[in-house]
Length: 190
Image (cartoon, rainbow, N blue to C red; front, side, top):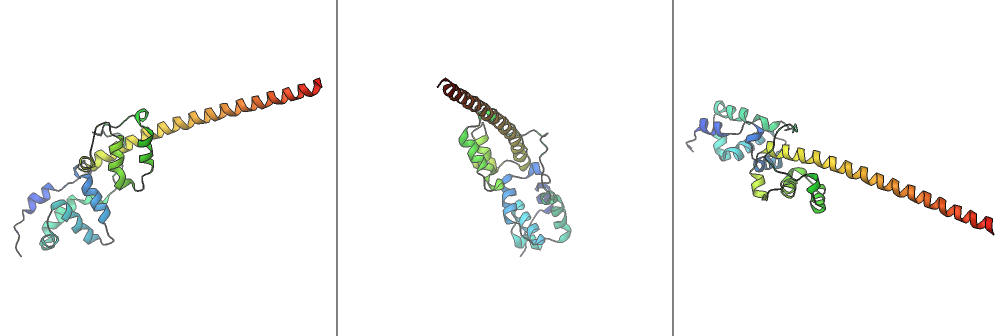
């Protein structure tokens, strides 16, 4: 079988960093990884180039190797820094309604649920399809910043609740002491 493939063009069009990889491609790759490294390489190239597996298997190694080198970043973990800007326009923690908060904390699988979480946390009306077409770096940075804001909000809520509980305990303590005083006064009068 002969297939006319422009290897140079295909190699140039491959993503070489997280900001070039669509989230839907990343999700597909992560959900289809196996224990076999060679199969994973072909699966990733198949997904990112659109070339059939039999075509990929027929490409000489000297041409395949530059393609594999270009996608090498996929084998590393992207760690958000919190310093990068995200194009996501996420709600401030004060704008998060309870239902949205519950949606985010009930996530069973952060990777597959990330588009849903981003959708409910976005100020802009985004569809799951639009979110899946965003790049991995932007989504990860946006979600990292959202988590950071949410942690601050939760700390404030916990602190506020602790103050309220303490206030109630103090009031209850003084109320009980007042009742005890009244009882002892009644006993002395009698």
